Image (cartoon, rainbow, N blue to C red; front, side, top):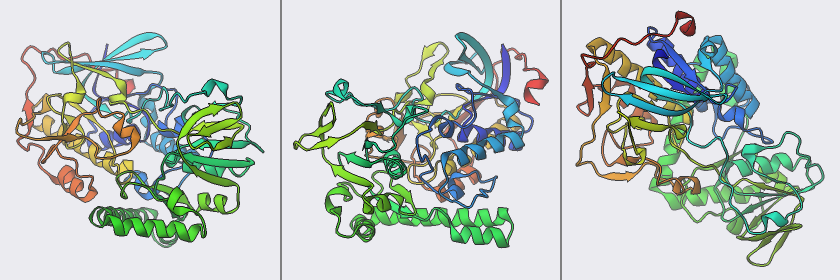
Length: 495
């Protein structure tokens, strides 16, 4: 059984970033990345539906340490996948990855101060031990998304497709397509499929806020032409971070004013359209994520009659399409169920401590990355109100600070201990369906530091990059006297 200082789970955007930070800030640590699939990229390798793209700008979704050099700020999936793979290749991270290693279980031994990690590999079980376990496996199930069992589903004569399992050769040219959903996936699919389909109808139960932004950032491109790419990237990144924070705070403080401004932008895009029905949500801005459309592509498709929006509740599927509860029939040759993700925690990994299974839903998150009374385990989870990577970069930096602090002081164990006086709150304060469906499996957050999630990059920057590691909540301990020195992985595995 091989032993590593750190086991990273997941070779997507977060996992590759974690590896870079680890080998840069903790160069003495031996690590391995266990990846369940056979490719680097995570989300950006799994999803292959038409038009897949980022739902935030690449100057904040990209890594802090690797400038985004493409002209488009709102990037397509293949470009992001190439960016992640390039990062892994040019830093030698790809040599640390064990593909087709799907992590299923992890057990912490207090006597040995280490984790035993079990992964399924081609039907067999591979075991590893590690001193620290870093989960970078995302937050949703790769096995499949949320796909409701609509009445009459078996009656429909055409293909029914979920974006997470997009067929390689789906022919929709000249076809009538209905896309069920109004989130980021739906607003991406509709204009892209409308380029070839006869008509694409976005069928939504209720509207979402949709905002158009230029696909290319003119200021960023100008800066990159006139100063170094790294400086240009840093300037653009901070500008976008601060603008995003300003807008989020405005939405929280003045929701009605923000809502009116967003809806007025849609009215300008779609003059004479029934914006009240189809683009005016029932909730306030940032109670759910806003949907970003580059260069108004969704609105252009609607204006040109290649796409339509229908708002209503589904009664049942029929042989030739979908019938709504109000009796309206929508004809379809293909139905796409862009109905959301299925959330799981820690990649669905079963966590045990000294052989006793731990219910992670009963834990409280410490600084948004570690879990109460769970030793030597951290996870990457990005922002809900900003780019995922902003928080993940800070998380990786903090984990490295923690590991270095432990080394300097001879500690083998780091575990946040929960204060019983800290009040509980839902981990994610979002009304989105995919969050609400998963509340019973998600941990909690607290009502004060360091257990509270602030969704604020500047505040997290101060706390995670410069705040105390030994803050009175994190409990440290040296290795048990009887803990045996583990057999380390061979040098080749860490070169």
